[in-house]
Image (tube, rainbow, N blue to C red; front, side, top):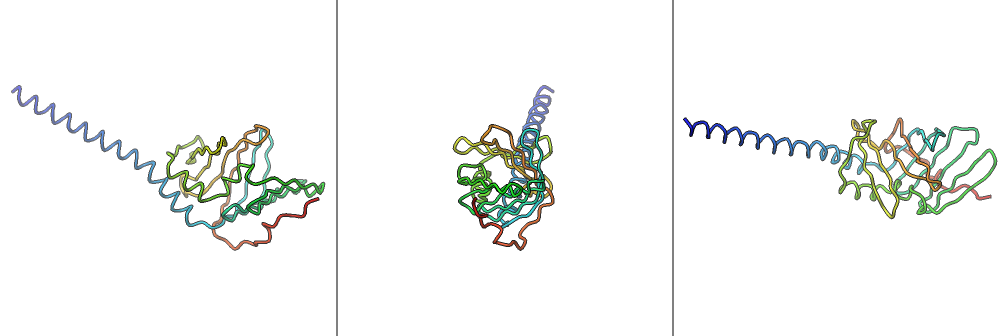
Length: 197
């Protein structure tokens, strides 16, 4: 009788261990599967266009952007200043068309240096564990040269859905992507820097 009880306990322990191992493997796969899908999806993208909402502190701006990898971006803000943001891969220009003011920055001095570099993002997220944030987005936090950039991907489509950075004034900048289109025909001329004043 005692041997039978010992055998039952050993069988129960084996079953519990088996289910714990299965649960651990399933948990790891549940995170690795979306990561693999994000990497596969992102790998196939050459360019994207999208509408955006950008929040800096309490100020919200909206507009439309085009990104061509690597490191090219053109954004037109839908505001009274008709602000434009353009990167040719080396420099970033922000132009206020209302007042005809143009500001130029080296791209490498901005977080866009990393955000617009698809290969950099892919190499980083391969070695990172994603987390699900409160908006149900898959988030990867990337640290590089004291810059922290959070990149967000949609948990259903695995498309890029935005990013979060800190600007030079230490404001949190949250950039949300909407209505994303992939691998479309893009006019290359829009990535030419506007004339400087």
